[in-house]
Amino acid sequence: MRLRQIFVIGLALSLLGIGAPAWSQDDPRSCNDLMADDTPAYVVCRWMATPEEALDIAEFWLANDGEHLREATPIDPILINCTEAGNVCPPSEEGDGDGRLHDIGEPDVEGTEDGGTPECREGETCYVNPAALSQAELAQAGKTAAGQAVGAATQAGMRVWIDAELAGAWKDGKLDAAVRKLAALAAQPGVAGIRFTTRIGFDQTFQSADEMDRFVAETSAALRKLAPGKKLGAHTVVPVLGCGSDDACKAEVGAKHPLLDPDRIGAWLAKGQIDQLALDSGHLATEYATWKIDAAKAQRNQWIQVRARAWDAYGQVAAEDAGFAAAGSPQLTTEQAAQVITDRVASPLQNDAAETVTLWSRWQNDQGQVSRMYGEKWAANATWDQLKKLTSVRPRLATVYDPARPEVDAATDLKNLSEVFGQVYVHSA
Image 1 (cartoon, one colour):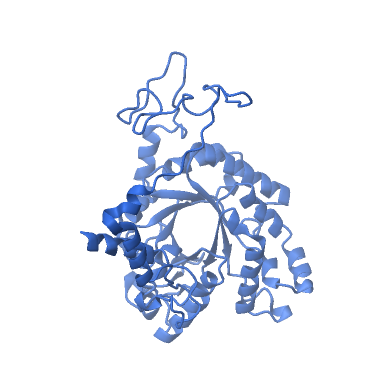
Image 2: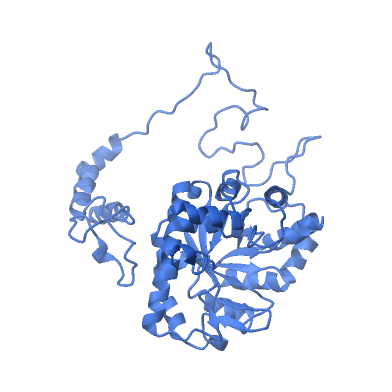
């Protein structure tokens, strides 16, 4: 029994080192040799306590039948005596709970001993459904193509976001109805959040920055009310970030895209109006040719700027790439696919600014041409085979799925997508 305790304590201490920097394989505290062969180079392991040190620690606490463990006591709690002069305690009806200490295991509110909701006192409203949605609305949402896809994605073990565009409804004065419908869909089991707009500020939907800000603020407030607890996201591009320190580039690109001011967009995160900001990479290859800034340098510039602005202190930043898919299906060799994955998947993550990467695995243009990152009807190809090897970063990879345009059917498609992606944005209409 004692050997088992020592082993368990040592194992727990050693696992705490996963993820800490280990700058060299010669580092005596490096445990990179314990990780899988396909672990990305930027994921490292370092012992906080080596096995030998963990054994010493365990033996200290377990010596003499655990004498030191028995002697160790919790730190005395900080208590305030409300009867002492100078101490001010709020009345119980204005504070939390009932204003008194409770024993361990004793419910804070009378009537909740069995985990139930206490009965309301006369004239008191003690619970209100925050979503204000009927069972009929929830059931109807679950029967839609998007609702069925949400169920299939959840069954496949994916984290689900609802993907929608509410800018048109907001401009037409129909936001309330659109949000209500979207909230019912987001209430389905397994849904983590709602992305309510894409390419915001890049297209011609909004005529001014103030109008765009009002849309974000009002839509966010409506969704917070009808879909409480769900994360909110927005997708856009911020071309000026790719200029880096080139002042001429920043001046011209900023004038070309006046609505896409990084300070204004960053404020949506800082104000809590959105929880996730996805930055598209579609413009990186062509936007900066005048200043001899190629795609790789523009991407590096962008993520340096994002880090400098500390957007990740307010929410999650995602990289988004629709260019990974090819008309029909990719015809890359294994080596070419590996290089593209390095450039478009590994680089944003290694730049330590994007926490997730969203790849469009299938999309269709206005002429009906389908672009995929896998083979038609899920036929094997080198690109998809290489992507399936990224098991270590699967939780950080997401894709977009349109249930109205399936490859085969929602269940088949999402099961296959779950082999590469840990998250999926299900298009709502």
